[in-house]
Length: 306
Image (cartoon, rainbow, N blue to C red; front, side):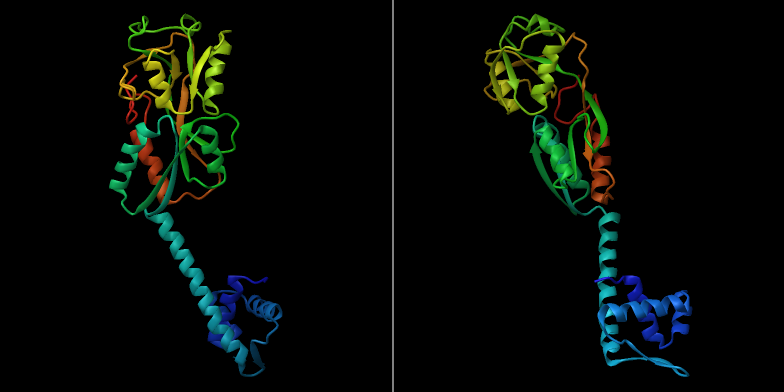
């Protein structure tokens, strides 16, 4: 169907006034515009809406009377949609789907989630964790409203940086070099490496070796950060990570050491990913503000300080 709500509103004004001239005065639109709208509606629906009386104005046909009732009802529904949209965008309520990179999801999300819902109990917040590639894909497909993850080059989404996370070397606390203040990757390159095997992450860690002309000697790999930590704590090998769990005890009870890298390694950029050119709800805007207050380079919930 090819008609507009504006045409319906002009028809309603004319139907209530029983005069195009009076309707024109009420809605501040020229009489020809109202006449044109009525003619287009009659043509579109194939019905005569008015009897035209040359000296006494106009009156609704029986079809026009029924059409007037339906038009009022339709415009009422349209207004309720407008009111609903206003409620969604002007109050912190409604659904909110947040995705987080799984390496730091168990660290930062519990505090962020609880504190946000304490402040905004009317938000129906859903939490998802995934790898970096999938998070970006889900934001692009509108399956997520916002994602907390690392910056990726070349994506067609909006990224707002919140914190810088330097890459560090992860060793067993009993490793001979675990007490060093810093280490270069070359000092460990001949030792077995435990790889966090996730899209984007594995390419990033491989690039650190390639940049220095070193070979990555992978002895074990896992998509679960805590599994990597347990392998390292057992003395199987070393690893590199960017998230820094506050606890230096692995799931298997082994102790860990976080050693800063002396190599010139650019830090990872942690931030918020959202779609471009969308009208954000109040819930999304409030969550963005919440993240800005809670996440910074030197203070990230659940993470050890630099």
